[in-house]
Amino acid sequence: MPKPPPVSAAAAELGRRLRQRRKAANFTQLELAYQAASTVAAISNYENGRMLPSLTTLLDLAYVLQVDPGELVSQLKPDTSPADRLGTGRRVER
Image 1: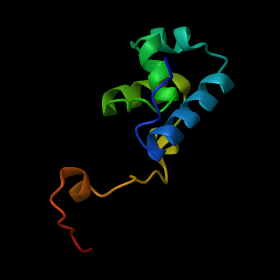
Image 2: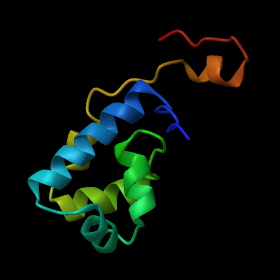
Image 3: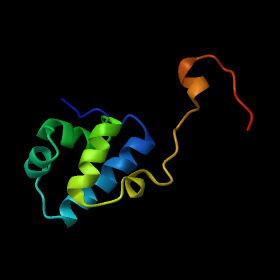
Image 4: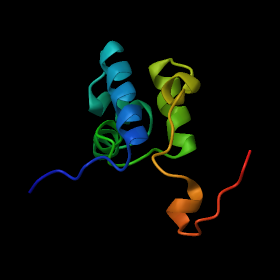
């Protein structure tokens, strides 16, 4: 069965950053999952962009990896606007 694609380009990039930081810290997915009170399946899903971690989990992962959480999410952009995802079609001008 083929693996599902990333949920978004931002999720894929966040996953790439998490994997890079995990490997730089010499953690296996199992070790990171244990230290961050998560699961190997969740870590794999985050790293492959199939799931986005909650804010609490993201903070836990950043703490364990000894990285500022901002470095993990800096410059990430959604693929679509919130209005488009909700189907309202309304856009807010800034």
